[in-house]
Structure formats: structure tokens, C-alpha cells
Image 1 (cartoon, rainbow, N blue to C red):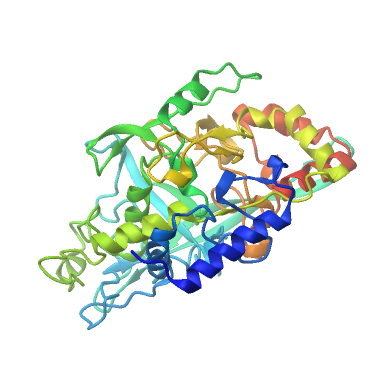
Image 2 (image 1 turned 60 degrees about the vertical axis):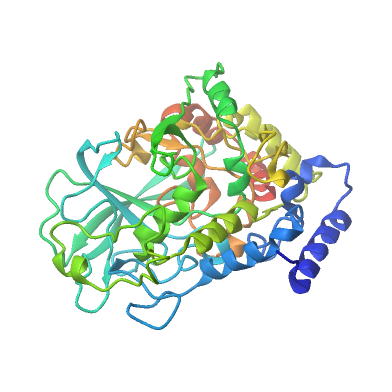
Length: 462
């Protein structure tokens, strides 16, 4: 595969920017090792790794095209035919604006532009995962192609309450509840379990994939303070047909990046892939089952080809992570100290090293600073969704990486925090922490105004 000059020039410029943007000996800036870029603009999450193999630049460009592609309804004389029959959005980037975080609707009249609703009923499927709703499946799809009714409309209502800090300062928090109307396939039932999720940021995933199982098991075994535990999720790998450690998804419920990408194509867009070859129709959705498919040919039996799936996964693997900023600022240094004192580093582990035999050489043996352990933690009843997912309980969530989080609302001004976007600021997100993180939350509650500002300033520097 030959190197294309425009992409070569872009990568060279990024690499040079990295060298000129910081003293190369100051490794604190290198959030993603050699996959770090020195960019703090709205494009910070959308750049290829400077360490990417030049021979693979075409794969990155092809994957970027797939990520930004607007899909159309089949049949059509278009390689992007196959949208639906049931779907939420027409492109990946609609939920992951500029590869960043999505947002929750502001109230009952807002649309779920960058949010989806996970569904299940009590029990487990054949491989120990969530049991899908018999009529609505495991994901609520509001939209349908002509002739196929969308499943209905989901909306949020918020309940607000005030948190008071030790110095008397108050902070308003909001908690969403999910409601439905215009259901097309019957009642959901009283036993339905619903979990709202905003679209997560998608940069740096190749490096998280490159953290070894042995590292995660060692982190699980480590002794931790203040009742903090942390454990891996054991999930079914649908591609290799075996149980594996989960690391993707908000409950670490997906084992591989390929499966994560394929599931999103199928669940969000209704696009079949070699890893998810069946349309997302349930047994009662007869119009969905009869709708035309966008299959290209007997040689490419799914709507997304093997090559396009590979390229999209490659794109996710090689998206760079923005460098840290202002690491010598006095307020940032104070905030970093407070972050550690509050035990936040027990779960948001600052440094990890990737395996020596990662799928791409550029991802191998990299010292990275994602601020996560990729383990499940009980986050308390206030953050619970009540929906188990493999071994994750309804109160457990995977520790989200914090690298790049300080640019989240620069990339997408409406971006929210936490799994359901309820938190509008980083401080709100901190004050929702409970369960194993309750000690850390209370440490923040006891801080002065100046120390809380320093803590937030540190998070903004990541």
C-alpha cells in the first residue's frame, strides 16, 4: 500500500508539531507515548498517530471515510446503501462529534442526538450476557426506514438536588430518568431494565486494546485503600467464540475493538458486518425482517465489507491522544497533588504500559497515561442503572479514561460527563461518585474553594 503525499504531509507536520511543542525529555506531556499529538484545537481528537506506519495511511483514510459516511436506504446504487431497517443515526460521527463525547438531551423535548438506550429483561442470554427484550431487542431504535415503524420515542426527565460543600458553597446536580412514548411494538413491561448512554470519545482505543490481560489481572489483585476493589469483567467474545476479559464499553462488556466497532454499526445504524451479519430485527418486527438489505454481492454478503470493517477498526486504533498541557502551572501541580490525596488514583491510575506484542508495532511497549485501570467498580446507588452486563452488576462501571478530558467541551461544547451525560461539568461528575469512590467524593467536599478549583484545573490539563 503506497503512501499518499497529502496524508504523509499531515503526519509529518503533526510529528514536527509534537517535537516543537515540548521538550522531548518531559515525558509528562506524552499522554499516549509515541501516539501523542500536540494539538488543543477542536480537532484534537481527530488526528492520526505520528507513529503510525506510513504504509497504512490509506487504511486510516478509508476508515475515517467510513466513520464519517452518511448511510442511505437500500436498495440504492451506492456503496453506502443498507441503513436500517431500524436505526438511531445515519453516521458514526453523528453520535461522536469530532470523535469526542456526546451529550444528553436537556429535557423531555430534547432529542437523543448522541445518546442511546440499552435494554434488557431479567435473566441472561446463552453466553451469560444481558437478555434482550423479546420485542425491542437490546437497544432502542427510534427510527425506521419507510415501511418499518421505528420503535418509539425515548425521553428524559430530570430530578435536581443541591450538594453542599464544607465551606457552604452549593452545587446543583441533576439525575435523569428514562420514559417512553409512541411505542410501536407493544408495552415494554414492568421488568424492563433501561440504561441511557451518551456516545463516548473514540481516540486512543488502540492503546487500551494493547494493555495485556496480565496487566488487568494484576491491577485486580492489587491491595487498595478505603474499600476500593476493582475487578475485570468476563464476557463472550463473539468473534473468537470464547470467554475473554472485557475492556470496551461502559461496563467493560466487550472484549475486542473489532467487536465494539461492529456492534456500533449494527446497533446504531442497522449496518450488517462480517462480525454482525444479521439485521437488528426481533421476531415480532415482521416489516423489519422483510425490508431490503444493502448486501453488495455473494462475495460481500454484508453491508459493510471486511475491508471497510478492518479500515474502520484501524482508524480507531490509530487515532492519537492530545498531549497534556500546563504541567508546570502551580495550580495544576496543586490539583494533581489533591487528586492523589483524595485517592482518585486508586482507580484512575496515571500510568500503564502496553504489551510488547500489540497488533501494531507502534502500539507496543508504550508508557501511556490514560488515568484508568479498565476495571469495574461499584459506584453507588445514585449512579446505578440497575442493569447487569455479564459479571458487571447494576451498580458497577468501568473506570473511564481521563486522558484528553480537559478538551471535551472544546471539541463538543455540549459534551456531558459520566455514562449518561448528567454531569455538565467535571466537578458535577466528581460529586456523583459514590460506592467505592465515596471517600474520594467526601475529600473533595471538604476542600476549600481554591483547592476545588485546583483539582478541576488539573483535570482540565489532562
